[in-house]
Length: 183
Image (tube, rainbow, N blue to C red):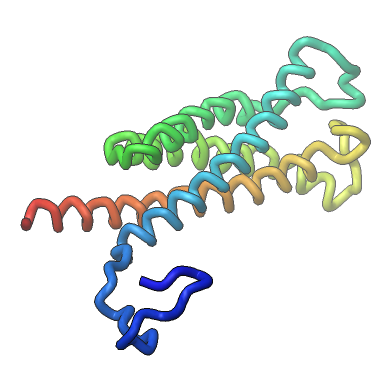
């Protein structure tokens, strides 16, 4: 072994690295997927905090309803979407398959389902805004239906990627588990 300042070991030209151990590809993939899921979870937490703030401010009458509109019905069940994120955060450090599966199933139930219902609930209002240019609910001067549809579009993408990456991570963990059982 040569030190940084010292000479190179005799008899080597630097091409003897092939025999060295490497991190298996499924472990590298697991780390990359965990990182992506964490980023999506943090982004979901940001969406959730904004939604919770809007519901809380409206329910406690902290500001006028002209500034922050009263929440749509779908926003209340969407507040339960924090549950899959908590399970996802709990699953990642110790590769807990059960928590990740619970996170994936509850993401469909508590995240995607309220968003689908919300898009259907707000459709007549959006149609009225498009056809007649009239809006009766506002969030900081913007049409509430436009703002909430923007939130829905972003949230659907976040939750879709969360479920996709969680499925890929689950496959990686199952591959690792199966390899350990074969040995």
